[in-house]
Image (cartoon, rainbow, N blue to C red):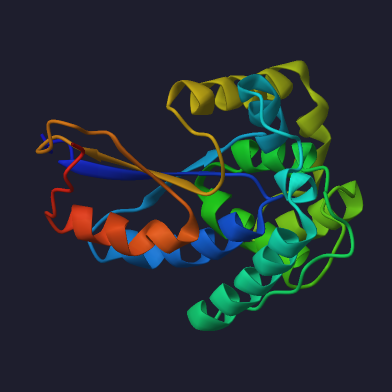
Length: 212
């Protein structure tokens, strides 16, 4: 009998977030360095925002100077991390269908998630298109017809439930990393933003941040 791991790493994401794209690109390497696999948690960011009273598209609610800063910050981070990136011509993008498909992807979830992120935020493809999603699914070994299942009531319910679970976990944006560590009395520990990955790595190595 194998003991349960002492720690786990969850990543809450929505394909609509460029910062989640950057975090998702690098999180698997951080997890692998500790013998872990990322536990992917898709959720609908707009639904969460509405539930907690945040504007549907926070970027559009920012003053012009801050919008320019965010755009520059994204480009800087992408270059720093070595991740191909281009702000998409379609923004915001409806991500309901790809999120549902990520839930259905099973063992192929990670390659599918990475492929959809790149398609949207590097290749400027329309990931709300069933045809585009079918192509991306096929590229990672999933059947094209899986796209048709995204409209089934139980799949819709699973995404709603996943979004409610994200809110219950204290998630308020994407990407959000949650470290579960049985050795830490304050676990689970939540970290928001791709720039928090070094802190996630430090916690997994045994660092104990003060919460006081």
